[in-house]
Amino acid sequence: MSFDLNNHKIKDKIFSACFGLEKECLRVDENGFLAHTDHGFDDEHLQRDFCENQVEFVTDAFDNIKDVCAQLTQLHKTVQKNLAVRKSGREFLWSFSNPPYVKGENDVPIANFVGTWANKSVYRKYLAEKYGRLKMLYSGIHFNFSFNNELIESAFESSGKSDFCSFKNDIYLELAQKSVQYAWLIVYLTAASPVIDCSFINADKIGETVVTYYSSARCSEAGYWNTFVPTLKYGSTEEYVQSIQKYIDEGRLKSVSEIYYPIRLKPQGENTLENLHIRGVNHIEFRMFDVNPLSPIGILEDDIKFVHCLIVYLMSQPKITLSDDEQITAINNEKMAARLDDEQTIEFLGDKRSIKSTALDELCKIRKFYENFGDDEILKIIDKQIDKIKYPDKRYANIVKKEYGKNYVKNGLKLAEKYQNELIDT
Image 1 (cartoon, rainbow, N blue to C red):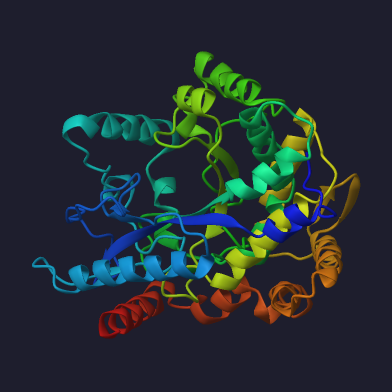
Image 2 (cartoon, one colour):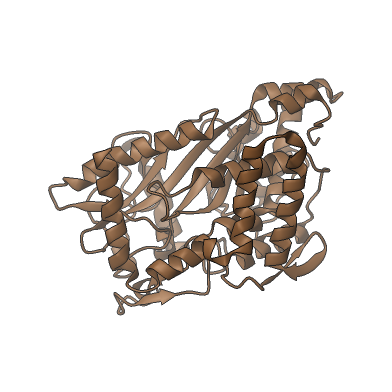
């Protein structure tokens, strides 16, 4: 099922794709506490997830990464202009995955959905009781990806298969397995949340900065995970759906939305198992990105471009079938990648090695793969990732640790104000 790059029709279209972003972000007041005003936005692009004091930016799908980032920037401008002049006092968008000052569970207001959407608030109350409200404050970015249909059609023509829909689904099922296996690498290269305020751990200690031993708290074992490690079946969309439905039937999950997993396969329209079974896979969702404070929109274009390069690389490699044990190992690897220690050991492709050396080896393989493409821009993107490993001071987590390891919230407020002013002025 892997793409045959010896087929020129496929190779010519291999980078044709659609991209979308969903970014979670907390609203804070001028003193660094969670805002307790209403969400205040009536726009399908400006939603909220768990918390009423959260903004979830949802872009459209674009055929290039530059345009999706441009829309995300424009949405930030809209929100920042609104927050700067709120009657209850100026508010800011928090620029980190980890929250600012927190006064305990009751400081986290569940999103107030009404009318036909009231069931969303009911579901969030269920999540609050099961997982606690504090972990809902972790913010992240989801990267939505789909191959261009012309690319899939070209691959289908030479496949000898008779059912295009099944063929298309199988491509995403294969990519999902490979992406789960490599999720640790994305976390290792993009993690950006090693610092937190102690109030997140102890509400009585507001203002004490804690440098954790995580590069990404939300992707670590301290993050937002299910109470067990789900293992999914990828033989077909029917098997995939049934493997999730089994957990729902057993009462271990409420719905498909409760799968807290680095990779999700999504249908077009409402995210339900019925919709996925009937309509098939529309896109794949990468859920492991931290909000990066080094960017006013929380993510850098080069990191998205690298993941796109990784996707193409993975789909050129032989097909795999992840066993249940291998899926559990992959999740453990992601949690290990979320630690700051470069000497953490992971089990990858049958070997136990330090995560640093494994990451470097994999990036070198990916770079070698692209050397035959004659595209210097791709090589530069990969080289930037390699530099993060060779030069630890270029890793986002280390930069954040250095700049915000003292006075996390106070310095974070200065950054939030800076980004707000910059976006309003442009």
